[in-house]
Length: 262
Image: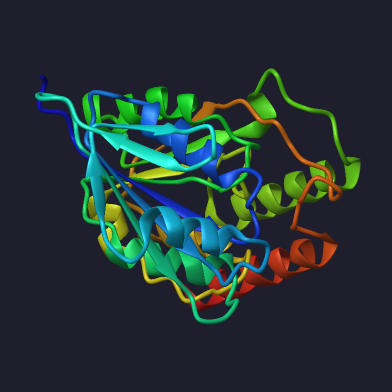
């Protein structure tokens, strides 16, 4: 087996009982030759997500070389000699603190040389990591790789005001931080351990997307790339959580982090 750079997958979770098992299965199967550390942070879910995580992973690391989901919806680990390890660790917040807080907890626990952020729903396809990982770990061309939902096909047609808000936030970010990205609010951000070690994340809500991007851009030294990804967006009835208030907060955070320079 090739000695490939290990990957930490950080998954913030809040009330995603219907999708969390499928997400764990999907992320375990991508890049099968790469050792993966999967860190799941439950932000005090109330829909059964926490109970499922505790039943399957408890408070200890579980290790195997492959993961399956049995007919009862539970995780089954198996091992094969010479295969890359998959380690799963769950962390549990005592109260709901927000996506940013969950990312802070998971980044503190991440120990691999490459890190990627994965939402706990099924809006994103982990298979898109392959081209992101190649840029960071295989070809060493990038320190940071963003996914872009606006270059993606297929892409579900949903709310125009979400599309407009994302485009406006990204445009303002590019103007303020001298960048040319197309989708800074995207979940998929993959970066090297060196980048992770310099991030100082303090934002507890969805503004974490802006703060991460602001710190990366203001460092003025990281090689930033962007790749098209698939996007299967959800409606509010299907569990989407971001709303118009988060859009206005994002604009405030753009100005705050630019003026404070951190």
